[in-house]
Length: 405
Image: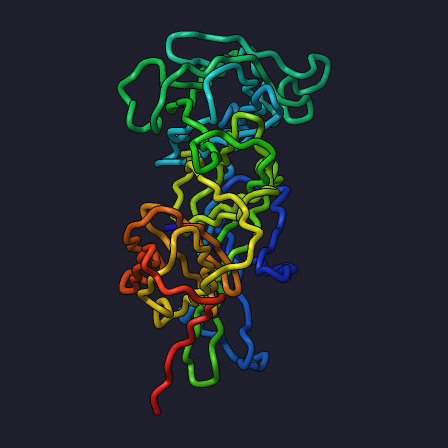
């Protein structure tokens, strides 16, 4: 049975609900860290107890400080030739520290590093990729204890093999196995896992040509809740830019001429926004991400249409208005989100991405045919645009829904 002694400290919460607190000088043992709060509308006297089971206590993070470790598994990281840093996730299962299956952006050379635990006199440290062993060297040899965090990390150059697919799916491949091997005068220690190279996402134009100089931003979902005096809880969600600097990454980042991008982020709900002059911005639908994989979906941008729209179609929770219309070839259609929630307009001929409230997406239809489209945010919403030379000649049109009292 584990017993926890409570130590309460205040934390500052930013405007987006993000807070940070550094745990330091921890003694041997197990720790549980969580945050509690006093919601608006609940004024507890000093003698009252807040019911934390009603959602006032956040999920907990459990930390074990183990003095028998030779290497701090949480310090392990990989840095590519462009300075991007990857932090593979680690886990502790019944005292066995393991490096979880992990994916980097592309095959090639990386600098692997790890910090020896204080008071451990490490004689050798090696990184093993597949069957290849690479000797690591400490950042300094003249500090005591040698190899501790006072001396900096042990590091070496390793090569991640050219394997495609999530590391876990290739668990049987020798080239994907990875280990840290540390030795002192009295013991050997190891941390094992799997390592693989993934495939970066590509931002392209409508013809499939990669587009460079695109600003790609990763957003993370933040869920907030409030409880009124009757105990009723209201939950809402919004997206805020992911703080990539906490993981040694840039956010936003800019694509090179090959249009590639990728992020490695912890578990969570995310979406990506891509924008560049000459193109309409694109926002992906929200997706669940598992730590260890790459965030690297392909994105196709639509060119900017500067001309005024011939027809404006409003998108709301009620659907598209109008849902069906006939236009002449060459007509420019503008989809406008007039709702407070996200929507989209998608067909085999175009993809607006997520349209946030007030956002506009334009498409020019030149070919005579019937275009069926829908809204990924509202599967019951559908529409059709008929492009025909027999369409009535009209001026710019804005269709509004009919309200019947």
